[in-house]
Amino acid sequence: MAELVRRQHLNADVGYHAFALQESDDADLPVPFPDGFQRGVFLNAFPGRLDLYSAGHTHTASVTVEVWDGRPPAHDASGWDEQAEADFDSPSGEVAMWSMSLARTEEVFALGSPGTWRVRVSCVGRAEAAALSGGEGTGDGVERYLAQFWPAKA
Image 1 (spheres, rainbow, N blue to C red):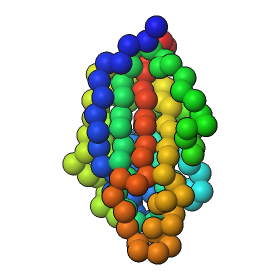
Image 2 (image 1 turned 180 degrees about the vertical axis):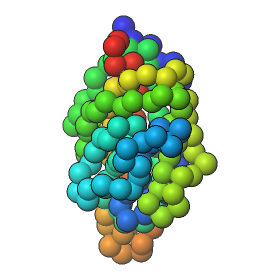
Image 3 (image 1 turned 90 degrees about the vertical axis):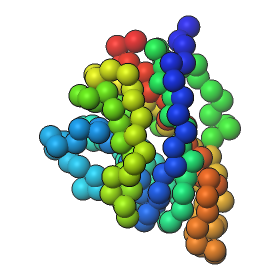
């Protein structure tokens, strides 16, 4: 059974419905954020980059990142608004948070080692984030993400 290695809580500055998790050493990425961002696609993977489409236009989303030593146990999908999986290549083993409006933020997390990873991203609070965007404009932690990484070869 897979074991949780580390957990970290981050804040994502969402702008124009977008934020990304991108390889920290991004100098050689063929498509750096936000190039090629697709509106309406919950999780879109590029080499060394994961784009996330938020239901809210401008707000701060809460992101919990977990690193596992193997595939984490499945959780009940009915408890989440969205859920998707993708591959993620990380030559440095470190991932940075990117915002459409702020570019690279100070939020960084360590995977533990370079390599190819698998990631499952789940999200809840999308309707509330969309309602805030349509009314007051912003929210803090209303939309919540869980990104679970594990070695692709596990």
